[in-house]
Length: 284
Image (cartoon, rainbow, N blue to C red; front, top):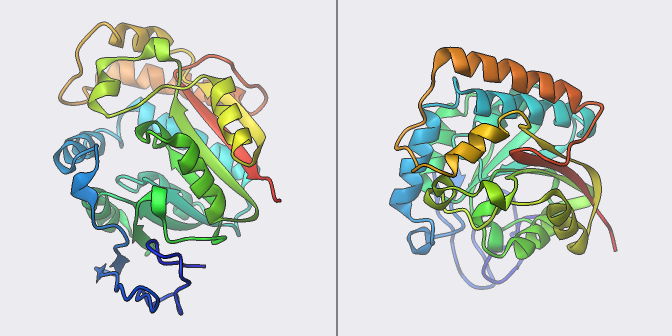
C-alpha cells in the first residue's frame, strides 16, 4: 500500500497522491510522484551527486566493473527471485540495472531521491517502469513490494540500520532484499570520501545488520576478488575526475570478473572488493 510519508495515512488510490489527513498534495512531474522535497538539505548535495552520476553514466556501458556487477545481479535474480515478483530498485541512479532486469522479464519500479537520477531514469525508461522520487528513510510504501534491490546505496546512508528497517516495512510477507555494498575498510580510499560513503562492510557485519533488523540470510558472498590489488593501490592515490578505461585491461578484467561470477553459482567468498547479499523478511 501507499502511505503519506508525513503522517502514514493510507492514500485512497494508487493514482492519487493527496493526503486527506494532513492535507498535503505531493506533486507529479513527468508521471513521477515526488514524495521528498528537502533534497538540497541532504549531506550528499545536489551538485556532488550530479558530478558522480554523470561520471558513472559516461562509463557504465563500457567499464568492466559496472558490466560485471550487472551480470552478477542478473545471475542472483535468476537464482533467487521469481519473475512474477513486484520489484523496486532503490537508489537506481541511471536506471541501468532496473532496465536490465526489466529487459529480462522482471516487473520493475524505480526509486530515486535525486532529481538528476530521475532525469537519467526517465531517459533510459524504454520499458515504461513506474518511477518514484522519495527518501528511503521516510518512504511512501508499506507491505508493497516483493523484492527490493539496493545496489551500492547502503554505504551512503549514515543510519544503515534504520534504512534496513524501512526496507523491511516496504516488503510483503516473505519479501526479499538483494543488495551490494563495497567491502573492507582497509580498502577505504579518497574515492569513498568523494562518493560520500560512510563505511565499507565486512561480510559478517552486513549479515548481522540484516539479521538484527528482521531478516534471514539466504545468500551472501564477496565478489571482485581478483581486483583487490588494484583497489588497494587506489587507497594510495587521489580520486580521479573521470573513470578512465584502458580497452585491453578493461577486456581482461571483464573476462576475469565474469569467470568469478560463474564460480559464485557454486561458492561464496569471504574476501573481495564488494559484497552481494540476498535476505528474506522474517515475519513476526
